[in-house]
Figure 1 (cartoon, rainbow, N blue to C red):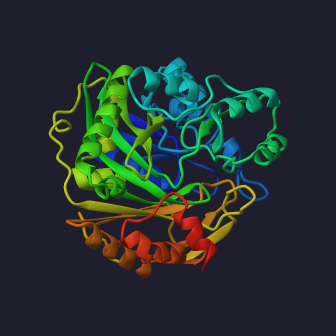
Figure 2 (spheres, helix red, strand yellow; figure 1 turned 90 degrees about the vertical axis):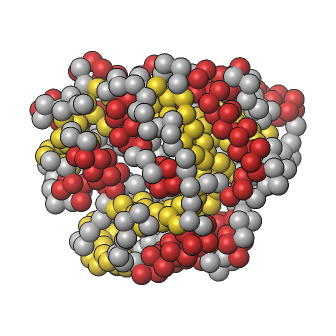
Figure 3 (cartoon, helix red, strand yellow; figure 1 turned 135 degrees about the vertical axis):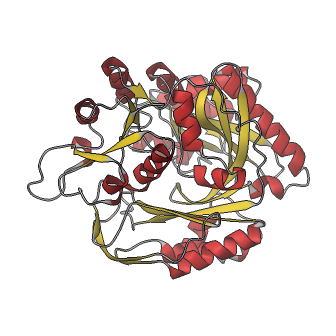
Amino acid sequence: MFEKILVANRGEVAARVARTCRRIGADTVAVHTDGEEEDVHAQACDEAVRVGPPRTNGAVPVRDSYASVAALITAARATGCTALHPGYGLLDDDPTLARACEAAGIAFIGPSPEELVLYRDRFSIRHAAFDAGLRILPGSERPIREPSELRADVEAIGYPLVIKPAFGLGEPNVLPTLDSADDLERAIAGIEWEGAACYVERHVDRPRHVEVQVVGDGRGNCVVIGDREVSVRKDHRRVLAESPAPAIDALRSGAAVRSAIGAAAIDLALYLRFRGVGSAHFLIDARGSFYFLGFHPLLQPEHAVIEACANIDLVEVQVRLANGEPMPPEVPRVAPTGHAVQARIEAATDPRDGRPFPGRADDVRWPPAPAGKVRIETGIQPRSRVQHDHDPVVATVTTYAPTRHEAVLVLDRVIAETRIAPLVTNLRLLRRALNHESFRACQYDEGFLDRVSANP
C-alpha cells in the first residue's frame, strides 16, 4: 500500500478520499490555500500543506493553487508523498498532471497520461465503442473545424442534431438542439472556431442518462458493480442520482436491458484494457434502446449511490488497483440490493458561466445521519466561504433503504432539516424535485428539472 498520498483537491471529495485512505493505512496530505488551514478537507488529512501564493487582496485563485500542476507536484515532493489522488473535478482528467506525476516518480491514482489523452478524445472513444460492438448514435466521422464541414455533416445526417465539443471528459454543455437550417446558422455564428473542434450527433428526444459502474484490472478482468441514473439535472449539471437506474426498472424488458447494457460496458472496458474504477455512459430512449455516450475512467461524485447498494468502497478499490494489486476478491462477489438516492447541494450559480456566487455559510446544521442509511459528504462548516472559482457543490447527501420510496422519503427529510445560511443554495429546488409527482413516479428525463424550475 502507498505510504503517503497527496489528495490534490478540496472540499467534500478531498475529505471523502482521506477517510478511506486512513482506514486502509495510508497517510494523507491535504493541500490548501492561504487562509484555508481550518477548512474541512485540510483537517480531514494527517498533514496539510499550503499551495499557491500568500493571500493579499481577496482569495487565492484556484488556477494558482489547486489547479496548478507545478504547485501540486512541489507539495507532493516536499511532504514525501509516493502517490497522488486527484479526487474528481479540477485536474483529475488532465494528462499534464498525470505526466508530471510520472516524471516525478509519484504514482497517479488514475489512468496513465496516454490513456487520459485517449479518453478525452471523444472520436477515439466513439470508434472504440463501435469496434467493441456498442450501438452509437449517428454522427460526425471526424472532428469539425470549420463551418463548411459542419454544414456538410448536418446535410448528411439530418435533423434533429446536437453539437458537442470534440475533446474533453464528462458531459459537454451541448448547444441547443438543431431542428432547422436557421438553428444551424445561429449555432455557427456562436462558435469560436479558431483552435476549436466539434462534432454533431443525432438528438434523442427526452432521453434518460444511465451510467454503468465498472471495475477493471487491466489484465482481462472486468466487473459491473451496478448502474445509476443521472437524468435529473439543472442547466446540464447533475442534481439527483439514483441506483439502480429507474430508467431501466421502468421498462417492461428492464431485466434484459440491464443485462445487455452491463455486458456492453464490460465489452468496452475489456476492449480498452481498462484498469481502475470507471463508468460507461449511455442514453436510453422511450423504447428502451440504449446508445453509447462516453466513458469516464475516474471516480465521479455519484459513486456513493453505487457504494450504498453494493456495500463496497470504490475509493479503496481504486487505490489498490493503482498500487498494482490484483482485482480485490470482494469485487466479483458484489450483489447490489435496495435503492440509493443522492442529492447535490450547490451554492447558487451565475447563469453566465455556471460558477457560484461568492458567499459565506455562517450557520451550517445537518440532521442525524444513521450509519448505513444516510451519508453526508461536505466540505463546509460554520464560517466557510465559497468563492467564484470554486466548484458550486458544497455537499452531497446519499440515502439508502430497501425500496426507492423509502430512500426518497428519507432524503427529502434530510434536505428539509438541513440548514445552510446565509449562503444561497438549491435546497428548495431539491425538495421541489423530490416531491414532484413525475419524480416520485419515475417518469422523468433530462429536461425534467429545467421544466420544474421554469414553472415555480
